[in-house]
Image (cartoon, rainbow, N blue to C red; front, side, top):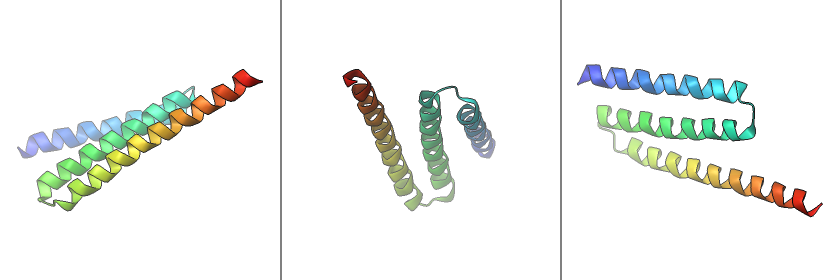
Length: 91
């Protein structure tokens, strides 16, 4: 089981690296927002793996908070984008 956990942790780190590349080289704000969502879900996965591995229930609570914050960030991005497009249509 330890080998599986280590391979899974490596996979999650590679996800973070891929997301970082998308943030740095992403051609649009949409790409950067999707990378931020990837960071959020990967962070939640890392916290859940750590919680299970260390037997810390509090890490599950932190993972839940991170998941909610990631969802709120996505909603805020969409609302901002939507309001900018509405403003462009009016002018």
